[in-house]
Length: 353
Ligand code: 9MR
Image (tube, rainbow, N blue to C red; front, side):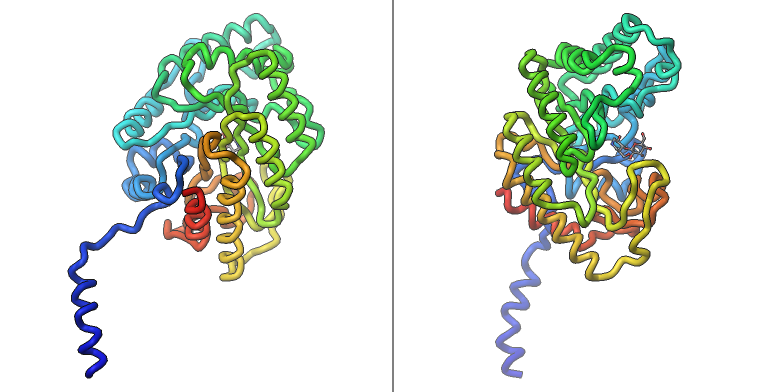
């Protein structure tokens, strides 16, 4: 009885305090915290909107800003989805990151089926980037101007229609055009595996040096950061440090962390873990925390464009369908509840303050 009596005043005090909404991921970081999202989710899905509003201050459209989505034939542009998202982002104080101008896999069929004609392709690129970039000038903070131009293991140029037809100069040309369209936008070269494939990393860094030496307006490097629980941490830290030495903005642009493996090809999943255990969830929380800390440790504050997850819930992750793999790569689970990974990430981001 005596105990309860002593306890009562503090209980009353607690009850009188206004309920505080727990702060989201974005409040814990001193740099933008982003997520990829699909256009219909950010425009229509109130559950998705609520999570974005609480946790993120930057968005990347997972698919709707790709060339195949906006430029479906030579004479045709479809802006509806992008316009809606631009408005939504502006009304809700969300930074919009543009993904992506030139990407082999985002290239629409009508271009891939064109006869190789470098003058014609150059003209199409010019018209496309100038039209697109100018339309959203000042509304898109940064662009993945060229995505995935290099190959794994060798770091040689990917033989896309752009490379095959225009030569390696297509990369510089795309940056020049993007800069002409919006001189204020941060312009990224974005790629996967550069955090762990050191040959590819160094090829990318040599390419960036060459572009800078030619005064090409490249201003950022995007590490997609589709990593695995066993991705070597020292290698990733080294890659971030080397990239930061360029002085460019560094974006971790498509983060997810899987348990299983794949060979990078569609359907190429290698199922190792069928079930998700408590230990695995904890280990993933630590890996997310470490990733945020590694970014903070290796990238100086003024070069931190931000960290973006490639979708925030296991329910909507691209991984299972793409690799035909059962996995749990994200911060939220199938029911859209935060996982331990969410709290680990939160902790890691908190070290930036
Ligand atoms: O997650 C995206 C998936 O929904 C699309 O079907 C696919 C093809 O457009 O692209 C996925 O996103 C890719 C991104 O644009 C570039 N880096 C690799 C991402 C995963 O494949």
